[in-house]
Image (cartoon, rainbow, N blue to C red; front, side, top):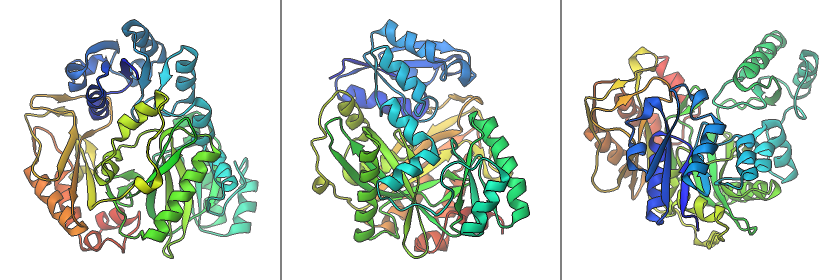
Length: 448
């Protein structure tokens, strides 16, 4: 087992990994930008090194500085968390070349699955259902029009290297396709440095359901059930829950087997998430793979009792999973709300600033993963998430009520947050029913 691990991240996920390390008897090394000098992950780590000024490109994305901190501290491994360099194949390869264990999949697996068109081809080879669409990247408007004639409208154009809804356009006619193709390609180039796009049939009212997988370096692969991430805004997840209100045992088994087959096809190791769209008829289709720990991993942890971060570390150290699929049972109901420093009344505008009060909730079945405290200044340079509130209860209605209680207790002053928005959303009849909404639910609700 490792003696010391460097965490190449910040905020709540860095703190989460530090805690996992300490529970395993492993020393944790933090890195931080000048904007994060007073952050909790810096205070809680055994060692901390400043790696640059506030802009992420000069600090948390600065590979030479992170590698230097790792070598100076004598850390044997790097955990990238999520975001920043977590899905950067080059970073993983640099770690490997420097004899530093990257706690995640190999750089080859990241490369294969990070490109959405290539990942879709892998999914097809693994027998995983995929949405009808182009055979790989579409290189011209004329080719896009030929695909449209073959599969029919509506269609969605997607950036091959994309994520977070960028480089995506829904089109319904030839004219809109011609305009959107060039726009999506230009946006993909600007955001990801790769203009490649591909085309799929657009599923009008989908649910977004993902499967958490764990795979060790000995060929053992299992899944930990599903998470429903349908409640989102502009392709950014807001609420996650497990089990999904629309998934029965048969569908769970089928989606889980598909996710494991894809992981095996890709030679995947570590924790990963295979994301699916589920249509109104209960048919599921592959969407993408996240080759890292997810923001919402805690939902699965509370439902299964398995510490996913610790499992990642154990896998990276060469240990076998020590679990079979039969060991995995989903208990009760778990819901997570992401609390962001944003103003819902001003189109969710980010609201960095100083929290003059930060008093998180507690009590039975409530977990808060955050990195804030009273007097902490949220810098404007990074993601606006302040904390995640996760609750666990015996059934879905009990979990909703517990979340409402927890959000009612959560006191943050000095900045605007999404707590009031979440409280209203949790009371919406469509959400309470659980089965009659799609990924468009929040936009449709807010537009009324």
